[in-house]
Each structure stands twice: as C-alpha cells, then as structure tokens.
Length: 271
Image 1 (spheres, rainbow, N blue to C red):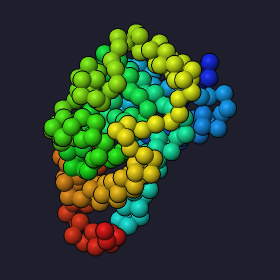
Image 2: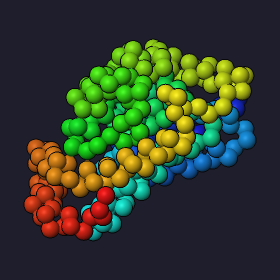
Image 3: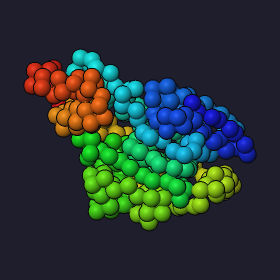
Image 4: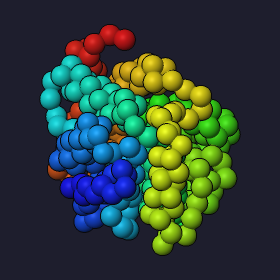
C-alpha cells in the first residue's frame, strides 16, 4: 500500500494503490500510519516526502470502505475518533514533511497537505475539497487554515463552491508553495529536502499555527464532522448520488436512514 525508500536521510513514502486512485481505505490508512510512525522513529530519516503512484496523488478517504452502519452513538464516536486521529497523524509528526502532489488530490489528502511543511505541485495536480457538495463540514483544520493561507474569498471557492484549482492556480493562491513540470516533481522535492537537511530545519506549521492550536481545531472539527455525516444533507446527498449510479441497494439504506432520522437522532450525544 505504501512504498518506502530512504536515501541521503530522506524517506519517500509513495501511496501505492493506483487501481483505487490511492484512496484512503482502512488498509491504506493503516499502512500510512505505520510508515509515518517508522519514519518518526528512524534516526536516519531527517525529512519525509509524501507522494502518490501516478496518475493520482490520492482520492481521499474511501467512505464506503471506512464507515459502516452502526448504532448512532457508536457511529458518531467512530467518525469523530477516526477523523481526529487521521489528521493528528500529520500534526504530531515530529520531522519536516514535504507533500509532492503528482496528480489529482481530493478531500482529506488536500487538507492534510496544508498541515505539512511544504506542498510542491506537479502541473498535473488538481485540488478538490467537495465538502459543500457532500453536505459535510470542513475537516483537517481547513476551516481555519484555508482562510488564513488563501484569504476568505479563495477559501470559500475551494471549500463551498466546488472550485478545483490546478497546480499552477494552487501555487497562486498559496495552497501549494510551488508548481513544477510533472517530470521534475520528485527531483525538486529531493532538492528541497536536501536543503532543509543542510539547514537543520525542524518541523514547522503553515500560517503561523502551532501544534497545540491545530490539535484544538482538529478536535472541534471532528465533532462537527461526526454530526454532519449523520445529518439530513449528507444522507440525502448520498441517496441521490448512489441512486444516480444505479446502486439502488446502498441508496435505499441512506433513504431509510434519512426517513427514520427523527427517531434515531435522539440517541446522538448532545453537543
């Protein structure tokens, strides 16, 4: 799931499930967590580069492979805990991380990138955070980080209006630190990592944020997201999407959840 290569004190982690667009299934998330934990403890690793096997960087969290129907309170707790743990993996990582976005990046793979030290985009990259379309709230600290990094107007376009900036556009608004030709992406990431090693660079956060402030934002967003996933907008949207794809069985599950929500929502924890 994740290829690991260490050379010259630089560890490159490559998301390696191109048939599934390198999406974050539970298997992929476990592999990524283990690879990052190993890199954190490896004395030979001073900088990490995270990229994907072409043509995608990452299609984001695979909802159908991660979220299973359960008691409302248990499902709420599961979503909150999984989301908070995922992004804390990046926030708490002790060494500099460069994200080399080699192709389309969607959802959590975009927001997690802004929690790293630098983002280098290929000219083949695109960035999408379809939270508004899905009827859910922002995650990965993007409710704060995006306005801080891009300004309110651009952040709203990305988070709520469905704008999918290219690599060049991402560099223009501050989502990416730089954009390079696709064939130069990994060489440039290696060059930057080597420079950081010579400078003795330590872990840093974009937008003048601190580890503690990001963890606080992540915790709050995770609670909001858990409620949103169990909210009427998301349930209705999933029903309509699955029905349009002729997946009547799964679609009817979401329709049943939507129609019975006034009953089972009483079991959700209070805010």
